[in-house]
Image (cartoon, helix red, strand yellow):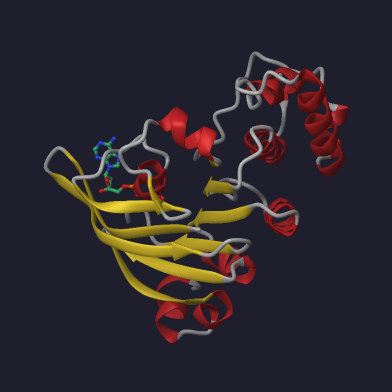
Length: 233
Ligand code: ATP
């Protein structure tokens, strides 16, 4: 579904992505794991069209998208949930959700989609009239994911959904991600929590200083001695 071919990207003099190549199969959960500063977020930003490439190609369903604008990429079906959630704290949960569907002018469809996600995230329904900023970290993460799903993505990019959350909440978020995949949305997940990500992912890539250094099925990476030593403690 998605193919990155030898992509390079720079922030001024900093060579953040040094020839990253990877593939995400339709209907799968694919993860990128790696330490702070490895280039995981930059990779997602490049796919979303926010971070320009200095060379290389990004293909979505066979079509090059690396010269497309971010809004076109969203309309094509790729939506990113940013690191740190970035929900709107002074808008209600309901208003935050509606912003995710801003490009859809069919109100009936938007209401149906919201109802669907209120079923998957019942806590958001309970909190619909509450300000986004008053939600707990886990609830804000659920809101950020639900907001992205309101745009009906075919490929969802998730940047560190487990960040700052207690283990039991991480478990519940990972369960929701699996449910979203089972519902037909392909997922590219970036995580520093390698254990949680690899338990969930069909396939995984290990990124170090802007390069892919290892790739395999998620379960195989979990037992890989190099991954165990560097990322699983
Ligand atoms: P983290 O998990 O900490 O977010 P990451 O793997 O997502 O790490 P990136 O955020 O993609 O890593 O960063 C890759 C490299 O690019 C790092 O060296 C980082 O310092 C640098 N970098 C990221 N954003 C910028 C920016 N806006 N300006 C300059 N350098 C940046």
